[in-house]
Image (tube, rainbow, N blue to C red):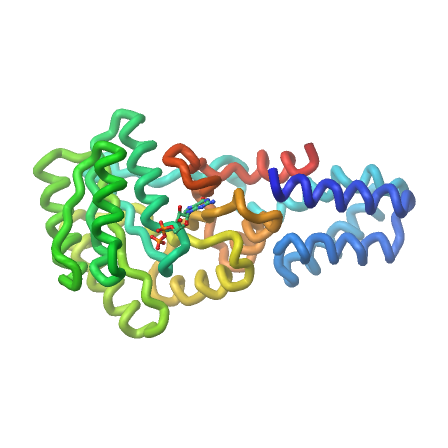
Length: 297
Ligand code: GDP
């Protein structure tokens, strides 16, 4: 809603100001998209395509360009992928599904795990959480509290212990309880990339060894309000591990929802979930078409 209010007001003002399509119109449109965090490279490419399309269809009236803009935004999100549908979380048909969460402190990782646990539990699934962030003060207690709120099992060790050992215990517990889903938290220290890589690869090795084809998702949590900072975190984490999906939190707190498109386009990682508030129910699967068309609603 925040992104829509800001974006649609600007687009409507632009359409009213220009009426007929010309160079200046596209230049201002470019600025609007960049200010919504769509990402400079993505915007440049989009404007070029938009200009061609407008010429091809012989559109003169700026109000007709709106439709082409939304078409292009959806196209940009999906790229060459045919799948124009919500990209949900992978599941393991033969045992516990394992989701590994990564991301720096403060982005909303613990909250998201709590929300996801609640969602899966209310779908009737048996969920176990593993408190693998043994580094950040209070992280274990916070996850424990979320687990209690969602009514799911939490496997934890003491602060400072080996994250891989916690995850190992989480896996054993999930297997013995016949859990459907194991969600693993990890520490998010970006200061030392080598440590981060070592820790994540050790945790992943344990998961891979214990459950074939796991983890079924490595979900990187990013804070939508941090703009280009989120992009650089995404780059660092994708170098450290194979990120399969993004959870973009705090989308409720920004008018710059264009970051969704930039992430998908520039990093080729799908946005799988979005955080829309602090409540346990404020987590939704990301639907790119609904998002883009909603901007113009
Ligand atoms: P972590 O350090 O990554 O585990 O971050 P936390 O889960 O502790 O979250 C940090 C802060 O962000 C908390 O105050 C959360 O309530 C808040 N937060 C998390 N997700 C969202 C969201 O989608 N929207 C809003 N508005 N706040 C969020």
